[in-house]
Length: 308
Image (cartoon, rainbow, N blue to C red; front, side, top):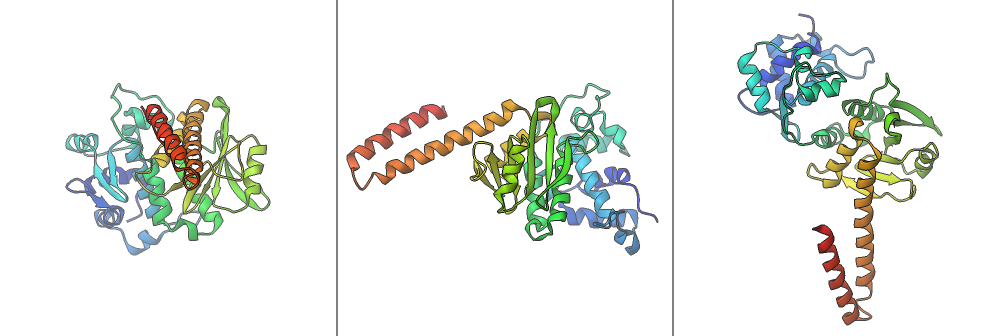
């Protein structure tokens, strides 16, 4: 048979995890059997030739189901049905993109108004988990820069940045290509690019008006206009990273505004200033123990009040 369109993968994807959670390889294998796909079907490439059509269709189905809160990822690379997804398959025998638009989270993602008053489901921010999974499992740092950019571009599209309205662009500087993200309505611009030691790229982005830049590799370095040479924070690729989760909330297209970005900056700036001050007090330890102990105790008391 010919390879089904990605929309036809939506309902079968749910069936693959109906009885138990599975990883994406198990789901892929199950879908191949479900559709009785031939080897040639599985090896058919997309028009760009960069990936298999089967994998592309499965990835889009997975993305849509996650946006509609039909599936959850309780741990990296593992998928399970949410309460909403389980309720749906007990009442229906098919699923289309138009069906997903009935749900407010997917309607918001698709840029349209939901046609029913279905309440929003409670859910954690999953974009950080998805990025961690992509950067780790796809061996991101060893890929050529052009492939790294395609991967990042696809992920940002999942955050609702679009090429058709000009909010997501590929630009070049000194033979380096980077992503330029522009939320005109909120007057917020920032850039993202594969990790590079060339700080000139970051400086160029700030000259263009970017509020911050993201250098993405084995860690994610976040630079702000205040210092193009030194990152405000370096975020490790850990699913529970507070910085990573909060960053992803800030850079979703619909949440990307000056208030959220400045709050993210302010907290990290305070943290960094507090750490620097503590280090300076510790340096005094050997020269004046009594003085430094009193200062450290006072600092900790103030920090405790701040934390509350």
